[in-house]
Image (tube, rainbow, N blue to C red; front, side, top):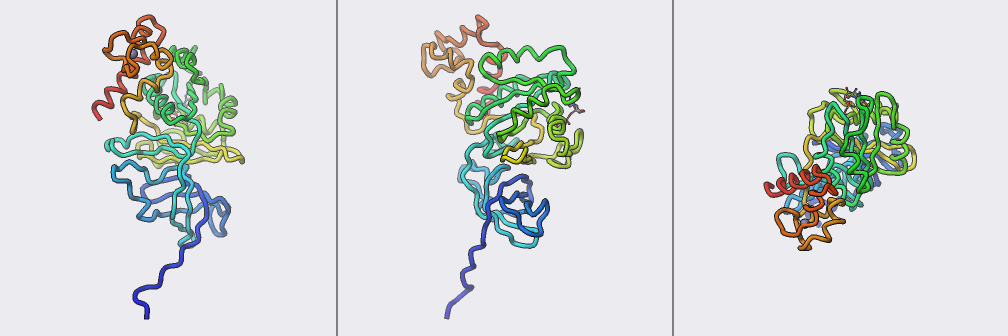
Length: 322
Ligand code: GDP
Ligand code: ZN
C-alpha cells in the first residue's frame, strides 16, 4: 500500500513572453493562442510559483522581468502559472530604489535602449543620460538618444555634439509637430527596444505618435502601463509590427543607479575616455588624482567635454556611497 499522495502529474507547459508585471503576478503573451483567453487567445494572467520568486543568496537575481521568455501552465479558465524562466540574452538593470542591493531588471531580451530626453520642459539632463549610457555600454546594448520637444527650441542642447562625437546616434523629435517620428519608427523596426527617460519628457506622446492604436494615455494616468504617474515599476512589452519587433515602455525614472558594476570598470564605460585612457601612466587609472593622466589633460584641453567628466565623478561618488 502506498503512503501519501501519488506524485502529481507534471503540468503541460507552453512557451510565452512576459509582457507586463506587477506585484500580483504577470501577464504573458502566448506563442500559440489558447481558446477562451483575451486578445484572440494570446493573453494569460499568471501567478508565480514560489521557487521562482526566490532570489539568490546575495539577493541579486531579479526573478522575473518584462521580456522574459517563460513556460506557463494553464491552471484555471483564465489563469496560469509561470513554471520556468529561460536564460536571458540581455538585460537592462538598475538597483531597486531604496533597496540598492537588489537588482531591478527593467527589461530582458532587448537589444536597444532608447533614451528619451527633452530639450526643455523638463530641461535636458545630461547626468541622467550619461548614467544610462554607461549602463548600456556595460550591458553591451545599443543606444539611441532621442531629444524630444524640438518644437520648443531653435536647436538641440549643446551636449549633443559630444555624444555624436563618440558614436551615439541622436534623433531630434517632436511629438507635437511630428518631427523625427518617421525616423524613430525606422529605428525601432527590427529591434526589441526598451524606452526610458525622466517622466514628462514625452515618452507616451512619442509612442502614441508612432502607433496611434496603442491608446497610451498622456499625462497623469497611463492605462496600458501603469495606474498613475507615481505608481512604481510597471513596464509593458508592446509588439511593434508582426516580425517580433517590440518596444518596452517603462515608468518614468528620476534617478538611474548602476547595479553590480565595479568601480574599476566605470572608466571604460565612457567611450570618449577609453580611447584616450590608453595614454595614462597607470593602466588602472581612475582619472582622479593620479599623475600623468591623459584623460585629465584632455578635459583641460577641451578634447573631452567637462560635463562628461562631471557625470563620471558623480557615478563614482554614488558607488562609494553604496
Ligand atoms: P512621459 O511622462 O515621458 O510619458 O511624457 P508625456 O507623453 O506624458 O508628456 C508630458 C507632457 O509633455 C504632456 O503635457 C505632453 O503633451 C507634452 N509633450 C510631449 N511631447 C511633446 C513635444 O514634442 N512638444 C511639446 N511642446 N510638448 C510635448
Ligand atoms: Zn587617467
